Length: 226
Length: 269
Image 1 (cartoon, one colour):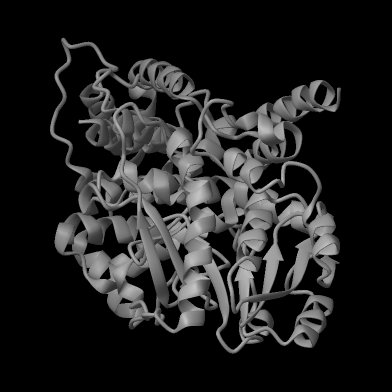
Image 2 (cartoon, rainbow over the protein chains, first blue to last red):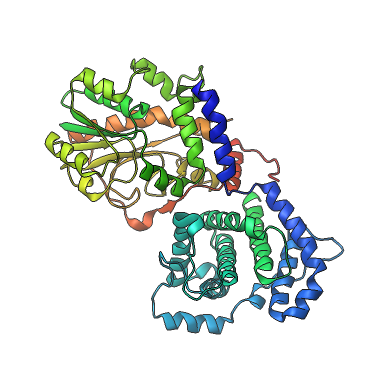
């Protein structure tokens, strides 16, 4: 009796509360986003060369995943084009003097992009600083979940989303480069938490970066399957 | 040897079977049990934060389905062990009353009331069968410490969902199993006592492996207590860098882990 009354309620509660996105939802979001991004590439280029660089890289990743017309072969996947220069990232690291910029309070804006630049530069031989930062970011996401990366004073809503998407991209790349699936696990969760806010594509940087974060995540997943 | 036991709920099969078997070993005296109450709001909130909506599934399985989660015809599950021990009805509280040992109910194991209760029992060892993080006030209470059985192979696989993680990473035979260890303030980082390696069978599933491990946890725990009492087991410290801490696995990775254990080559999409 209790079972027949309570079980459906618990299932309903779980489905309402669950932020997890299924493969089908992500595939649909990527397909819709790739169409939207291709159509609006001209508008994005007119708005900002920086956004356009992110958009082109994202289109290339989507082509790699098979979401774009095979008549448009993917170009190279040079992620350095959208990252701070390696020199700037190394100067940033030196400026920190060994201090790890990831804490319970989150991370200062721009941290994920700097770390991504160092990771792309150092690859498998990434040093202790980069590894420690990524490990702490992963733990931060796992422990704080939807509360991860809380707003730091003076941070606008869009900036916050940009940092979250950059963090998801970094974690997916770290999983791929370092072969540690715990990072992909955290990237999947971060992207799930952002799904409701960014699932419908719009030609602005937060949506472009979210699409890229999903593409990076699914590219890393496809390599796990392989 | 005086042993106290911490139980996650009043009806935990794991706790009841462990307590029952410990009492049968000569030289071991079960001096008391602490039972975490079925529900507290603060625990619900913190577990919801940790597990997300998966917590509702756990509640459904443990409190609503109960025995129904086990297959009738599988002899290697906790249900069979519990029936063999005659524990299919009742609770740890009624067991304690029957055995004539002190029993305390607590909102959480770290509560000062729990500490005071345990101090009065003067245990040599505390056996932990679940119920959240255990803080230093309890960890340092018994001379031999607090014994836990982790459902993964230590030191490599610490934390959550480690059966799934070991299968996903394809770490090969010897990567799935159980480890008993003396708890310390870290997550599964305390000195190791015993390990059990679970062989993966053709046609296995993650759920099947987990259910098979449940009764084995009881026996490994009891063997470890016995080994400590006999002096044949000595805790071996872990080095922090020898393992990683894992977290709740995302469902898309879980699908891959399930496929890995089944050896399926079917496409995932």
